[in-house]
Length: 441
Image (cartoon, rainbow, N blue to C red; front, top):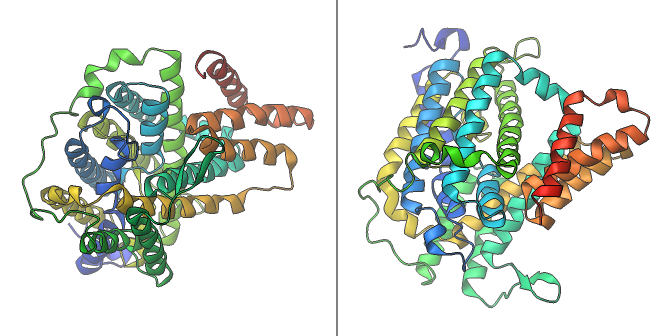
């Protein structure tokens, strides 16, 4: 085992890997409860119950997808990187595809399934490098920042901090509402944990918020902490059953968005974690193909289980900081996700007010991408700005990407830099023109 995971070469041991794996799990554990809330549209009060995903099934699918993905990453790529259904992608799945487009969640899962298969093919053929290089870095950063604002907006809504207003579209909510105050407490306590350097600050913040909510009678006490594993039957296999429903222009845009965001989110996370762990060689990531294959395989399997796109988690950096250097730590994280399956009774305690602070904090972290955009170059600043601002304002990640990718070739052309635009970007320009003509209302 030590030889396979190259313990001696990496200067690590079982103790460091186990502690690193545990730290990564605690940093990621919030996804077990946030993902079911998002995918079931828990923050949307008037959404028909029959159109919602089953929270228990999503909980199980989330844990299994995280476990399977982390095992593949650990065994095949041998990296200390764990996977789980990605933030931002789950919001796109729920709030754009299902809520805004009105696409059934079963068909949306089929879209995730197909995007995973395409990702696998792109990885095996080596085309991924061509696509990555075709899209300017500033637009990649803009997509990340825009998703951060979108996720934050969803969090503010769930917390009751931002509410609907017929005169101004949105306005500040009531601070006399106990549940809103609970969410504000959650934001503050999570920020305190983060500033104090807690590796699992988001998870600890959720725990503290839930406990305070129960003390003040805002959240019901759970009947038990450990229980039987919920049935995954409501979601399992729906992606395959509804495969034939994906052949529409609307689903093409959805699949492209799943693929695009996952593609660059994964690449960025892999580089970030590998750099921190000192695993980069000559500014290149060894076994990058294997790592991307693990990510793509996890997305495909996760879709079959019943969850949105599974991707590498940047929270893995917490495990690296605690000493993890090999894929063995990912195996440890996977085992802990499997054990977490027996804690499903806590789903009733993790209300929207408890998960909202997690969304807002994740948004803060994602918006940090803004610093990497050259705002002095107008031909870049314009498409980047429209990418970022249109996501929360249109309540659609896909629309934000479409706006940015439409403006980029135009601004570059007007600036006399048409030759610097990759042909793939012109192809995407045409696709998103069709998106606005035939799909948007």
